[in-house]
Image (cartoon, rainbow, N blue to C red; front, top):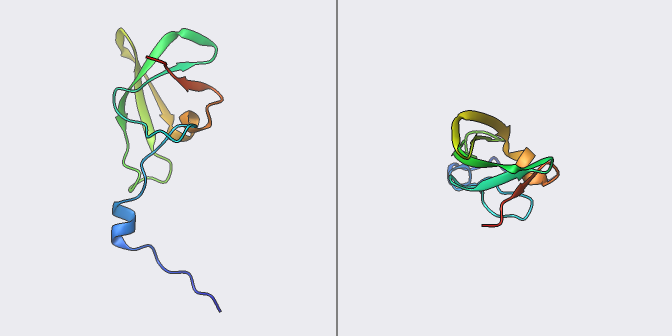
Length: 88
């Protein structure tokens, strides 16, 4: 019978980071736009640790308006259906 091995400490510690639909790691400073309002650019301000959370949250603020915040699951950025990465 096959037994599943428990996840080791180092595997958890070095787990992959959240990434977008293209497989690019989501990092602080990355810029995204919503497909319905491309004139509003959202800048990644904080990314929760993937080793602690299965679906890490990403905090973003609107460019030029640091008081306007959004908190999304990294899954919302991963799918690419609502948000897409800005082309610098």
